[in-house]
Amino acid sequence: MKPTRFIDSVNCAVEGIIYTARTQKHMRNHFVAALLLLLTVLFLKVSALEFTLLAVSVCFVLFAELVNTAIEVIVDLVSPEFHPLAKTAKDVAAGAVLVAAIGAAVMGYLILSHYIFPLYKELLGMIGTPTEMGTVVSLLAVVIVVVILKAISGRGTPLEGGLPSGHAAVAFSIATIVTLTTQDPLTSILTIALAVMVSHSRLLLRIHSLREVVLGAVTGTAITLAVMVLFRMIG
Image 1 (tube, rainbow, N blue to C red):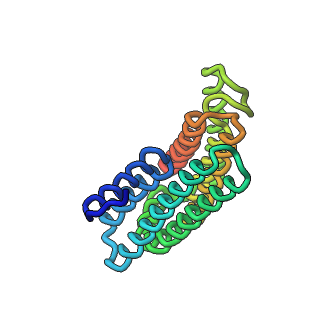
Image 2 (cartoon, rainbow, N blue to C red):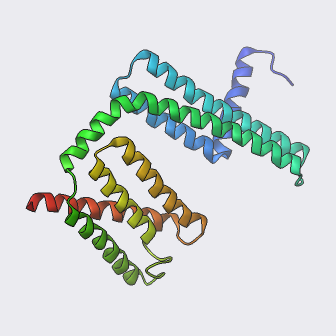
Image 3 (spheres, helix red, strand yellow):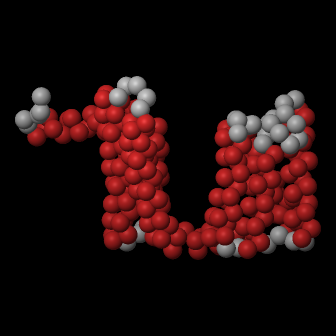
């Protein structure tokens, strides 16, 4: 029955949010992202208008995910068996969440970049730009370490499978090199995004596990940074 008291209506709404967070992984990810964004905003001390815009964007993403979950539940109730129209309804609802998330990401970039980019650029300047020799040595070091780790783990080959992911290691090594060479935050974000896409493709192809990909990314980044710092110290 429809609640007659305001407090009962609020309880029903809260139960709906809790159900979505409990059953939908994406909703939990949205909540974690919202929490991280809140902490970042407090640290950067953005203006009231910027905070309002970010809050509206986050709420819109959460709203879209709630509606998406409601549509999925209704579709499962009406059509428990597979039906092309049921799939279309779920895909369209998921598309609405994606559009909302893209809009929130654009909003977050336009607002937070003015605060984060100067700090990021200053940090890159402290590390310095890599030399040609440092670039070559870091890439070779990443490949050698990956081969050694795969030999120790006894899994996969140098070019496929095993611990860690060689593709992720090299991709993030190149992203780190490009980041330090250009000293440009936007270029850094784009190259890191490409490295993430390369790493994600290894997961989609079921060649590597998430742990192997993450270890590869950390290995490539850490070795490249270590070589760059070492070359700067001895230079």
